[in-house]
Structure formats: structure tokens, C-alpha cells
Length: 243
Image (cartoon, rainbow, N blue to C red; front, side, top):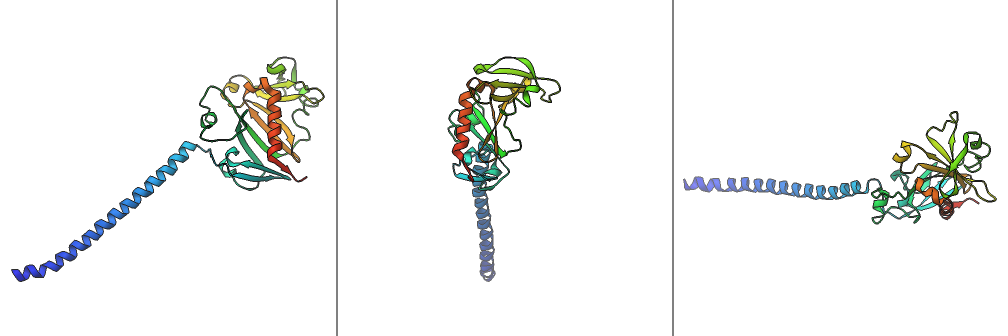
């Protein structure tokens, strides 16, 4: 019996050692999985919290035609566009009148958490028309509107479009400017206007054969001169042309 017990001893030791190795490896795998889940959870949680935004202020250089747009990444609306290189179009968003991009401090504004809307959307692309919206008023828009118009905010006049114009549920907002073509913007009307974050739209020519379309809340119409000047100044600030 004693010999048998002695003979069995080493075999039991080997079995216990193998079992302990399996237990150790199992705990090691669980620990690694736990770390991976923790790190992944933090990254995924941040991605959800950011909801497509970024607070990265790294300056990007985007080339459209003969123009270079130099702008921080947190100004750029879409993730895939937040890179240096050539593009056919660049979409930005920023706060007005601060003219800044997304950050932890501006999160509520970009998420439209408050009652006030203060985000403007800018789109740069190569010019397709010879005239901007102001230049199109005389030859095009004036033939598509119903006159007389009605008084609008900030001294503007609001015109409805005729049925054949193709601009359904839209109005034309016109502001007179001394020695210049009028300020002109198209705005949604009716229920669709209330549902939109930026129901008014205007395009201007900037840079070298570049068109800038900017969309904004209708509440900004009362300050249209300052708004248009701020957008134009910002475009000049971030734009470099081949000339």
C-alpha cells in the first residue's frame, strides 16, 4: 500500500500542475478580455457621446480647384472629410456669431439642446453659375416672384414664388444694399420651416471660381447685414487662392 501511494504521488502532482496551468491561462484570458472590453467601452462610449462631432482642432488643408481651405478639423462637418487633400466639396458648421467649431464647451449648441439655434452650415464647391444669388435676382428671381412683397425682418422684403417657379414651400428674402446687388436668400415656409435647423439659404462667390452656400436659422434674418459680412470675412480668413 505504501509503495502504491508513493508510486501514485508523482502522477497526482503532474495532474495538479497541468490543471493549475489551465486555470492560470483561463484567468489571463479573462483579464485580457476585461481590459479589452474596458478600453473598447470607453472608446465606443466616447464615439456615441461625440455623435460624429470632433473636438480635434488640428488644422486641415483641403484643396478645391485653385483654392486651399485651411480650417480646424472641428469645423468640418463629416468625419471622412477631416483630412488633408483634394476634394470636390467641403462642408463646415460653426456657431454664430462666435464663428467657432465644436468643443466640450459648445456641445449643447451643436446638439441644439437649447431653444435658440445658432449653428450655420457652410458648403464650398467649384462655381457652377456665373452669378451668385444676389446677381441672379434681376435676370432670374425677379421673374419668378409674386409682387408686391411683404415687409420682413431687418428691413427686408419677403416675396412668394409663382406656381411655375419650381420653388414650392419657399419664399425669397431680399434686402436692399446701396451701390451693390441686393442681399438675396431663399427660405423654407410653412411647417417645413419650423422643422428645419437652418431653413434659409444663400450663396456667394468667394476665392478663385468657388461658390459658398451657407444655411442659417431664420432668426438671423433680422441681422442679415452683419451675418453676411461675418460669413464673407470667415471665408476670406480660411481661404488661400492660386493667385
